Length: 244
Image 1 (spheres, one colour):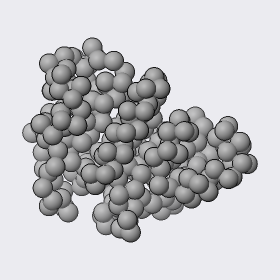
Image 2 (spheres, rainbow, N blue to C red; image 1 turned 90 degrees about the vertical axis):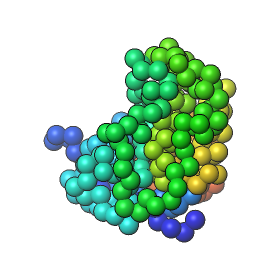
Image 3 (spheres, rainbow, N blue to C red; image 1 turned 60 degrees about the vertical axis):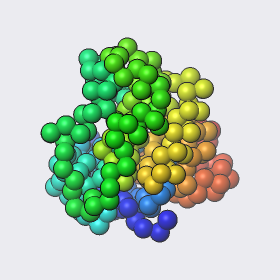
């Protein structure tokens, strides 16, 4: 796991005049699950949006698979091999499960950017094998699914684009403990199949269970970075910045 898949250097991102991300740098190595922790409103989602091109930084550089993302619109970033599982799932409630899954393969989304020469591992059949509950509900409308099923659908939809890196924003939000455990197992399974994950997560126990490397963000700045076991020993960081 030595290849730098994603490298963000000195990122500064604003919403209007509001200065949200204040000089953040982070790395994701190939095969890693990297977790971004922090209290609400500290800039975690904004950083995810900066990487995905939805809220481009005003300053700094983001390198993905050796390509600078400066000036890239979100659809071009996606074609390079990056997928987003957004906060709140954001599936299409009026489309069926099958239609939601097929969206990344539509005419508007087809095409693979530079460096995407490996065979596509995920298709409708393989995704439904990974998520048998979605196969059972293929004809149901997305809006009729439970919260946990919608989260599965959001993750499965991201896999349909065959990404190298998946950005996951609060995947356990609002889920029952048994469903949180399933999300943990899904992330581990995805990692074992060659995908890297940049995870934003409020559930400290879940985040620490899956992370290979951890960043803690406060008021748009990184205040800790290191392996999970090192964070566990930083009682001041845990108490002051995470409330743990």
